[in-house]
Length: 276
Image (cartoon, rainbow, N blue to C red; front, side, top):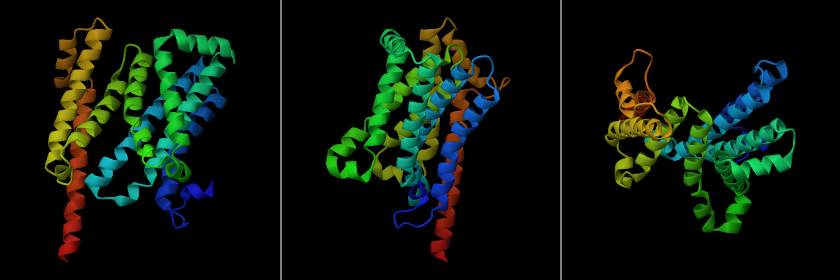
């Protein structure tokens, strides 16, 4: 356990210790609320949804490490990617275990439901993929698989798409949270398709933020247009009305612009140090 908060030289790492605490807190909080009876009439279902949500959040966070490391020029983020990715797999496993508990450990019913219900099938496939990536994330597996290890772990991208689709289907009518995290994923993917030389520059960041926001708005419009009877044009126009708070596309834009400011400040401070 102590090795989780050590760097590669075996020294205590405050950053890894803080990250581990952040990863553990949601599970501890949800479990305590469950134990205290503060999750309403169907506590198991509530904690099941909560752990599934956090599995998606941590999966996206693990994929964000590479762009953040490059944009912020912060190499110390790299070792956190494995820890966060494994946490996503653990939350997905906890999510499934809670579903089994909710079904009173009736495994025949569990697997028949997975086979018959599309959103459960997607969720189970995603779970198996995340567990495979988590198990194979060790240095030993990296040595065993060699070049195949990177190919295997590129499955994180399609698995994220499946996880997000499962999130939408689970969200029923209100998919605002799912749309927002999809917008963050869109930002990550747009950054990755940006030419490698441009990724080291600051000027593409505002453009990526705007592109991600537009993609978020279109995805939200498309979802409501295909999955509900809500007028998709009204959904698109709602992004211009802040009376009830910002829509996911606006929030994604703000997150992208805040990252621009942080990256600019960090680059400015680095240049001042070099000049001094």
